[in-house]
Image 1 (cartoon, rainbow, N blue to C red):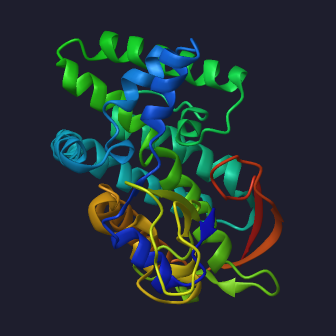
Image 2 (cartoon, rainbow, N blue to C red):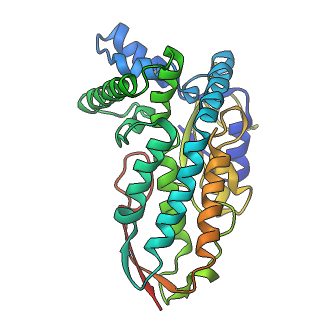
Amino acid sequence: MCRTLTAQSALDILLDGRFRTLDISAYYERLAHELGRDFPNIRFVARYVPLLHSGQKHRELRQQGALYLRTRSMALAAFEHRVADLVGEALSRPGQVEMVTEIITPIFEMAAQAITGLPYFPDVIRVFTTYNSLKMSRKIDADFAALRKMARQRFPQDSDETHGMRVGFSVLGVAPVGASLAQSFAAVIPRAHPVPINALPWGKHFLATALPVVGRETLGGPVCLAEGVADVRVCEVDLSRFTSEGQQPDYIFGAGPHACLGRSAALSLWGRIGAVLAQNRLNIRLLELAPASHKILDFPKKMLIEVTA
């Protein structure tokens, strides 16, 4: 396993046609057909997640995903306003605010409703790793079964394709956008002395990502990336380099054929939150930050802040 150490090397891997996203779909197919451990709902959903495919199949799914998101445009616009209002209201008066409980967790739920019309299931994003226990794989499969049942009940008019896309998007964007908001808040709010909220550099770009690493593997055998360097087959791409090195911060959403479909919506959301907080003359400081406990996403499990006059 290799890992990128600079923003440029991360970009090189993302744009290198010899690499693809980790073939999680094939992993679950092998579990079913070679080991007799079948997770049918995971295998169903995996067929509709563009990130789990490459080539022509990926292009088709990506186009279908873009069309699906257009059907959710009104819900996404309303979500953007609701989140900005939630953040603005929470920071509108002096006092302490535990931002994960009072802001980020509700955003997870709101994002799921906006993107899929379904509830938020926190464990399903773990489908992107093969390090799950048998118990967790069963939990993910059961969660997908519950989502599929609710989708059929709430949206009986869905075609099979739309049904798959709707449930598939429960693992795309929902958790990463909320978690990245938490990381960006933690990055911008000062930890020492209170600072006016409207003086903080909210800007138009996320200040941090809660998905710091994505995996890539070669389509064929090992490849040589540079003379004198060991051949590479699997690589971890460090997306956090794009913000820490100050180069192309929007590449935290990926680059090339697998760039995030929801990037523009996420950036619009951050921009609206910043516009609301740019009008806030109260002061703010970070009192306590508990480290992440999530298996995939890197965002604090507790973020206590204080707002003062």
